[in-house]
Image 1: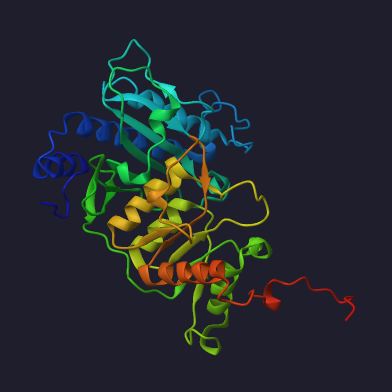
Image 2 (image 1 turned 60 degrees about the vertical axis):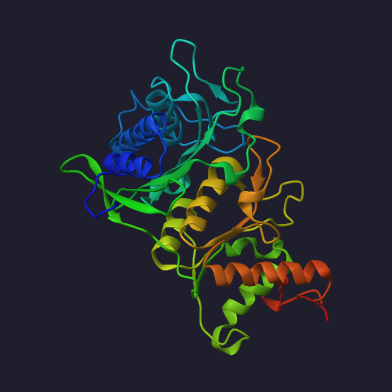
Length: 359
C-alpha cells in the first residue's frame, strides 16, 4: 500500500507484489531508470558548470533538430545505466536514429525501453524545468533478432511509464498501470520518496496551454476552442480562462496532474505531411498513459492517443490532453467540423491584419 515517505524502490516492489506480478526484471529496470534520472539530474543542476571535458559535443539529431550538450549526455547516461542489467532487449531514443539492441556481451531480458532523454532542452539555457520521459513495453518476440517492428506497439500495451523533472524540486512521476504516483528526490538520503500519492486530473478546469504563435496553422476546431477561451466571460463559455505555455512537455503535463487544465500540441497545416509535433512512442504515449491513469483524457482530437497503431519508430502525432470535460469538448468540435455540421470557423483573431489592407 502506498504511503507518504515511501521510497520509489520500495513502492515498485510492493506495487508489483500486490498486483500478483513476479516483476523481478521490471522492478530492476525501473530502478535502473531512476538511477539514470538521478545522474541526469546532477548534470542538469550543474548547468554551465558542467566540465567541457566530459560534455559530449552537440549536433543535429535524426529529426533535424539541434541537440544540446545535455541531450547527448542524458542519452548516454540512460543507455549506459540501463543496458547491462539483463532486463532489456533494446532501446529507442529521440536522440538515436535507429533502435539500440542490447549488446551481446550483456544478458538480454524481456522488456523494451523507449525514452526522450531531455524533454524541453531548448529551455535549459534559461533555467526552465526540463525532464526525461520514458515508456516500457514487453519485447514481443523472445529470442528473435530485435527489429523496429518490435517497438511498433500501441500505447495500450505499455507496462509502465513516467517522467523525471529537473527543476526547483526534482521529481519522478510514474504509473505501473494502476494509478499515478509522484516522488520527490530527497537529496539528504539520495532517494525519490512518495509525496503525491494517487494523483488525479481535475475533470474540469479554466486553464489551457498552447503555442499561440502557431494559431494561423491550426485547424478550425482548435481555433474555435481557443477563441472561446480567449473571449472568456463575454464569449459562449461565459467564464474567464488562463493561458499557459512552458514549451516543455514534462512541465506542462505535471501542471495538469497537479491542478488540471488542457495541453494542446495539435496537428496543423504548416507541414501537412506530418501528423503532429510530439513523437508518439516515447513522448505522447507515456504522457497519455499517465494522464488517463489519473482520470484525464488524451486525444488527437479525432481518436484516443493510446489507440494509435504506429507504423514508424519516430512517428509523430498531434495531442490534446488533460481535464476530461475540456478534451471531450475539443473532440466534439472536431467531430462536428468533420461532419460538416459547423460553418467553417473564422475569427479575426487569426486573420492577417494590415494597416494597408484594401476592403
